[in-house]
Image 1 (cartoon, rainbow, N blue to C red):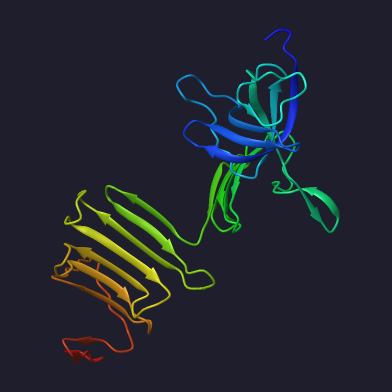
Image 2 (image 1 turned 180 degrees about the vertical axis):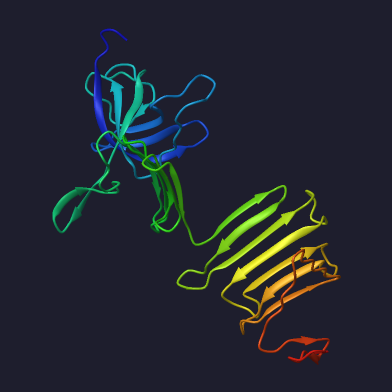
Length: 272
């Protein structure tokens, strides 16, 4: 708008319309703004791009024309006769007091130059973070104990978590650890078919229970075709409907005590 004089207002957000992407704000001198659109880094006509929704209490900068500003409510400026141009051009990082003086609150610490970060943070301290560094690393995190790091140094993907689960058409894999506990449980299911009633192999590895290692192969709800488990006493057990052991060169069974159907195997010519 050539020749249009504008003023810059330092404001606080008082209301947000998440659907319309507009805000209500109040300037430091008491000027009220209603239904003000805010600029986005980029968004196309079909909605692709970077989107965001502010929250009440955020600090922002509003650019408004001195004349014909219809959506500026409150004390008009001396040259104002209503309004036409009003837009929020950006948001400010709030300044908070600390023991070292003033600091910009809520920043991502030690962000390398040339990097970008997006973070959400709630009143209770929970939040999500997306950091893209100039060196090529990417960090996606929800709090400190749930993070994924993509590193170009060794082409690695690192997951840090207490609980993780992967679900697919052929089963699932999951790790579980209660917060503050040193007990870790691993459970997995590998199915032949996509339905839950198909033949499956179930694996459990855990530091709790009577069977810290338990591998079961068979149909759901029926006797397993094969089960291999190690109990809490360290004894290994192998069971199944029918076990066949074939050794082309030979079969050796050795142990301090060997029993077959409850009968002791003796160290002599006819041991059974």
